[in-house]
Image (tube, rainbow, N blue to C red; front, side):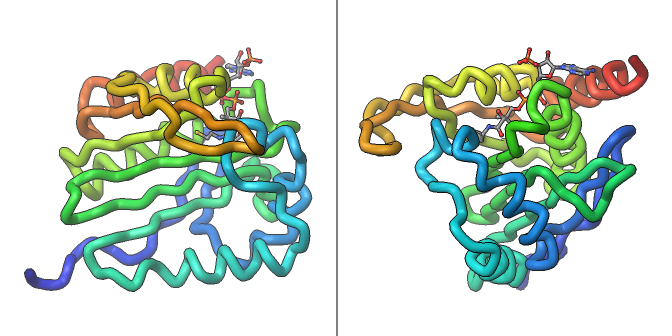
Length: 203
Ligand SMILES: CC(C)(COP(=O)(O)OP(=O)(O)OC[C@H]1O[C@@H](n2cnc3c(N)ncnc32)[C@H](O)[C@@H]1OP(=O)(O)O)[C@@H](O)C(=O)NCCC(=O)NCCS
Protein backbone atom coordinates (compact mmCIF):
# COMPACT_ATOMS: atom_id res chain seq x y z
CA UNK A 1 0.00 0.00 0.00
CA UNK A 2 1.45 3.44 -0.88
CA UNK A 3 2.18 5.87 1.99
CA UNK A 4 -0.93 7.57 3.29
CA UNK A 5 -1.15 11.09 1.89
CA UNK A 6 -3.13 12.31 4.89
CA UNK A 7 -1.33 14.99 6.97
CA UNK A 8 0.43 13.59 10.04
CA UNK A 9 -0.56 16.59 12.13
CA UNK A 10 -3.82 18.52 12.24
CA UNK A 11 -4.27 22.24 11.69
CA UNK A 12 -5.43 24.67 14.38
CA UNK A 13 -9.19 25.24 14.32
CA UNK A 14 -11.17 28.33 15.25
CA UNK A 15 -14.79 28.64 16.29
CA UNK A 16 -16.81 31.60 17.45
CA UNK A 17 -15.58 31.28 21.05
CA UNK A 18 -12.74 28.77 20.96
CA UNK A 19 -9.34 28.00 19.57
CA UNK A 20 -8.26 24.38 19.08
CA UNK A 21 -4.50 24.00 18.86
CA UNK A 22 -2.71 20.77 17.91
CA UNK A 23 -2.08 19.19 21.32
CA UNK A 24 1.56 19.20 22.44
CA UNK A 25 3.72 19.09 25.58
CA UNK A 26 3.54 22.88 25.88
CA UNK A 27 -0.14 22.51 26.87
CA UNK A 28 0.61 20.24 29.83
CA UNK A 29 0.83 22.86 32.63
CA UNK A 30 -2.56 24.44 31.87
CA UNK A 31 -4.23 21.11 31.18
CA UNK A 32 -2.77 19.66 34.38
CA UNK A 33 -4.56 22.40 36.31
CA UNK A 34 -7.84 21.74 34.48
CA UNK A 35 -7.68 17.96 34.32
CA UNK A 36 -6.51 17.01 37.79
CA UNK A 37 -10.12 17.56 38.82
CA UNK A 38 -11.35 14.11 40.05
CA UNK A 39 -14.90 14.70 38.69
CA UNK A 40 -13.51 14.38 35.18
CA UNK A 41 -12.70 10.70 35.79
CA UNK A 42 -16.00 9.38 37.16
CA UNK A 43 -16.83 7.50 33.95
CA UNK A 44 -13.49 7.00 32.22
CA UNK A 45 -10.79 4.48 33.16
CA UNK A 46 -7.97 7.04 33.53
CA UNK A 47 -7.11 8.68 36.83
CA UNK A 48 -6.17 12.34 37.40
CA UNK A 49 -2.59 13.13 36.41
CA UNK A 50 -0.32 13.41 39.43
CA UNK A 51 2.44 15.51 37.88
CA UNK A 52 2.79 17.96 35.00
CA UNK A 53 5.74 15.96 33.65
CA UNK A 54 3.55 12.88 33.20
CA UNK A 55 1.06 14.81 31.11
CA UNK A 56 3.90 16.48 29.24
CA UNK A 57 5.38 13.07 28.39
CA UNK A 58 2.00 11.80 27.23
CA UNK A 59 1.38 14.78 24.97
CA UNK A 60 4.93 14.60 23.60
CA UNK A 61 4.33 10.95 22.69
CA UNK A 62 0.92 11.50 21.13
CA UNK A 63 1.99 14.59 19.20
CA UNK A 64 4.83 12.57 17.63
CA UNK A 65 2.06 10.46 16.09
CA UNK A 66 1.56 6.70 15.85
CA UNK A 67 4.35 4.47 14.53
CA UNK A 68 1.93 2.94 12.02
CA UNK A 69 1.55 5.01 8.85
CA UNK A 70 -2.00 3.66 8.47
CA UNK A 71 -3.07 5.62 11.55
CA UNK A 72 -3.26 9.28 12.47
CA UNK A 73 -3.69 10.82 15.89
CA UNK A 74 -5.23 14.23 15.50
CA UNK A 75 -5.57 15.78 18.92
CA UNK A 76 -6.34 19.34 19.97
CA UNK A 77 -6.04 21.43 23.12
CA UNK A 78 -9.19 23.54 23.51
CA UNK A 79 -9.03 27.08 24.92
CA UNK A 80 -11.08 30.25 24.84
CA UNK A 81 -10.15 32.63 22.04
CA UNK A 82 -9.55 35.26 24.70
CA UNK A 83 -7.15 32.99 26.68
CA UNK A 84 -5.49 30.77 24.09
CA UNK A 85 -2.59 29.97 26.41
CA UNK A 86 -4.87 28.36 29.01
CA UNK A 87 -6.52 25.31 27.47
CA UNK A 88 -9.18 23.61 29.58
CA UNK A 89 -9.90 20.50 27.56
CA UNK A 90 -8.92 18.22 24.74
CA UNK A 91 -10.56 16.57 21.76
CA UNK A 92 -8.63 13.54 20.56
CA UNK A 93 -9.21 11.52 17.41
CA UNK A 94 -7.58 8.42 16.10
CA UNK A 95 -8.09 7.70 12.41
CA UNK A 96 -7.45 4.26 10.99
CA UNK A 97 -6.93 3.81 7.28
CA UNK A 98 -7.46 0.04 7.44
CA UNK A 99 -10.48 0.08 9.75
CA UNK A 100 -11.85 3.02 7.74
CA UNK A 101 -13.07 4.75 10.83
CA UNK A 102 -12.14 7.49 13.30
CA UNK A 103 -12.62 7.26 17.06
CA UNK A 104 -13.23 10.47 18.97
CA UNK A 105 -12.75 11.22 22.68
CA UNK A 106 -13.11 14.44 24.65
CA UNK A 107 -12.19 15.56 28.14
CA UNK A 108 -12.87 18.97 29.67
CA UNK A 109 -12.19 20.25 33.19
CA UNK A 110 -15.49 20.54 35.07
CA UNK A 111 -15.17 24.35 35.30
CA UNK A 112 -15.65 24.30 31.51
CA UNK A 113 -18.81 22.16 31.52
CA UNK A 114 -22.31 23.47 30.92
CA UNK A 115 -21.37 26.16 28.37
CA UNK A 116 -21.60 24.13 25.21
CA UNK A 117 -17.85 24.50 24.72
CA UNK A 118 -17.38 20.76 24.24
CA UNK A 119 -20.16 20.79 21.65
CA UNK A 120 -18.60 23.71 19.82
CA UNK A 121 -15.12 22.13 19.86
CA UNK A 122 -16.33 18.67 18.75
CA UNK A 123 -18.45 20.21 15.98
CA UNK A 124 -15.35 21.93 14.59
CA UNK A 125 -13.40 18.66 14.72
CA UNK A 126 -16.18 16.79 12.90
CA UNK A 127 -16.27 19.41 10.18
CA UNK A 128 -12.46 19.11 9.88
CA UNK A 129 -12.70 15.31 9.61
CA UNK A 130 -15.38 15.71 6.97
CA UNK A 131 -13.06 17.92 4.94
CA UNK A 132 -9.98 15.69 5.29
CA UNK A 133 -11.33 12.12 5.51
CA UNK A 134 -14.75 12.41 3.87
CA UNK A 135 -17.01 9.42 4.19
CA UNK A 136 -15.21 8.07 7.26
CA UNK A 137 -17.52 7.04 10.10
CA UNK A 138 -16.69 8.46 13.52
CA UNK A 139 -17.24 6.44 16.69
CA UNK A 140 -17.32 7.24 20.39
CA UNK A 141 -17.38 4.76 23.27
CA UNK A 142 -19.29 6.09 26.26
CA UNK A 143 -19.94 4.65 29.72
CA UNK A 144 -23.71 4.14 29.97
CA UNK A 145 -23.77 6.26 33.18
CA UNK A 146 -22.06 9.23 31.52
CA UNK A 147 -25.18 11.31 30.84
CA UNK A 148 -23.26 14.45 29.86
CA UNK A 149 -21.24 12.62 27.26
CA UNK A 150 -24.31 10.77 25.94
CA UNK A 151 -26.15 14.08 25.59
CA UNK A 152 -23.18 15.62 23.81
CA UNK A 153 -22.80 12.72 21.35
CA UNK A 154 -26.50 12.77 20.52
CA UNK A 155 -26.51 16.55 20.00
CA UNK A 156 -23.59 16.09 17.64
CA UNK A 157 -25.70 13.72 15.58
CA UNK A 158 -24.18 10.40 16.70
CA UNK A 159 -26.46 7.37 16.90
CA UNK A 160 -26.26 4.66 19.53
CA UNK A 161 -25.50 1.43 17.67
CA UNK A 162 -24.49 -1.03 20.38
CA UNK A 163 -24.32 -1.62 24.12
CA UNK A 164 -21.13 -3.36 25.17
CA UNK A 165 -21.86 -5.12 28.45
CA UNK A 166 -18.89 -5.33 30.81
CA UNK A 167 -16.75 -3.40 28.32
CA UNK A 168 -14.59 -1.68 30.89
CA UNK A 169 -13.52 -1.63 34.50
CA UNK A 170 -13.77 1.84 35.98
CA UNK A 171 -12.65 2.67 39.53
CA UNK A 172 -13.27 -0.87 40.75
CA UNK A 173 -16.61 -1.32 38.98
CA UNK A 174 -17.33 -3.29 35.83
CA UNK A 175 -19.04 -0.89 33.46
CA UNK A 176 -21.10 -1.04 30.29
CA UNK A 177 -20.43 1.16 27.29
CA UNK A 178 -22.47 2.48 24.43
CA UNK A 179 -20.89 2.54 21.02
CA UNK A 180 -21.99 5.69 19.23
CA UNK A 181 -21.48 6.21 15.54
CA UNK A 182 -21.78 9.09 13.16
CA UNK A 183 -22.32 7.17 9.92
CA UNK A 184 -19.85 9.29 7.99
CA UNK A 185 -18.22 12.58 8.74
CA UNK A 186 -20.15 14.64 6.24
CA UNK A 187 -23.47 12.88 6.84
CA UNK A 188 -26.62 14.72 7.86
CA UNK A 189 -25.42 14.48 11.47
CA UNK A 190 -22.36 16.59 10.85
CA UNK A 191 -24.23 19.09 8.76
CA UNK A 192 -26.84 19.53 11.46
CA UNK A 193 -24.11 19.75 14.14
CA UNK A 194 -22.50 22.48 12.07
CA UNK A 195 -25.78 24.31 11.73
CA UNK A 196 -26.58 23.94 15.44
CA UNK A 197 -23.09 25.11 16.31
CA UNK A 198 -23.54 28.18 14.13
CA UNK A 199 -26.96 28.95 15.59
CA UNK A 200 -25.72 28.49 19.18
CA UNK A 201 -22.72 30.70 18.52
CA UNK A 202 -24.95 33.45 17.26
CA UNK A 203 -27.08 33.46 20.42
C1 LIG B 1 -18.45 14.94 28.34
C2 LIG B 1 -18.21 16.43 28.54
C3 LIG B 1 -17.14 16.91 27.58
C4 LIG B 1 -19.53 17.17 28.29
O1 LIG B 1 -19.37 18.54 28.60
P1 LIG B 1 -20.64 19.55 28.62
O2 LIG B 1 -20.15 20.87 28.95
O3 LIG B 1 -21.71 18.94 29.47
O4 LIG B 1 -21.14 19.41 27.13
P2 LIG B 1 -21.63 20.48 26.09
O5 LIG B 1 -20.53 21.25 25.50
O6 LIG B 1 -22.51 19.74 25.15
O7 LIG B 1 -22.50 21.50 26.92
C5 LIG B 1 -23.80 21.17 27.33
C6 LIG B 1 -24.18 22.06 28.41
O8 LIG B 1 -24.03 23.42 27.99
C7 LIG B 1 -25.27 24.12 28.17
N1 LIG B 1 -25.38 25.04 27.04
C8 LIG B 1 -25.87 24.75 25.85
N2 LIG B 1 -25.78 25.82 25.04
C9 LIG B 1 -25.24 26.80 25.74
C10 LIG B 1 -24.91 28.15 25.43
N3 LIG B 1 -25.10 28.67 24.22
N4 LIG B 1 -24.34 28.87 26.39
C11 LIG B 1 -24.13 28.34 27.59
N5 LIG B 1 -24.43 27.07 27.94
C12 LIG B 1 -24.98 26.31 27.02
C13 LIG B 1 -26.32 23.06 28.14
O9 LIG B 1 -27.46 23.50 28.82
C14 LIG B 1 -25.62 21.94 28.86
O10 LIG B 1 -25.56 22.19 30.25
P3 LIG B 1 -26.29 21.26 31.32
O11 LIG B 1 -25.92 19.86 30.96
O12 LIG B 1 -25.75 21.71 32.62
O13 LIG B 1 -27.71 21.55 31.09
C15 LIG B 1 -17.76 16.72 29.99
O14 LIG B 1 -18.79 16.32 30.89
C16 LIG B 1 -16.47 15.99 30.39
O15 LIG B 1 -15.38 16.41 30.02
N6 LIG B 1 -16.57 14.91 31.19
C17 LIG B 1 -15.42 14.21 31.72
C18 LIG B 1 -14.68 13.41 30.68
C19 LIG B 1 -15.59 12.46 29.95
O16 LIG B 1 -16.40 11.78 30.56
N7 LIG B 1 -15.41 12.41 28.64
C20 LIG B 1 -16.23 11.59 27.78
C21 LIG B 1 -15.70 10.24 27.69
S1 LIG B 1 -16.74 9.24 26.64
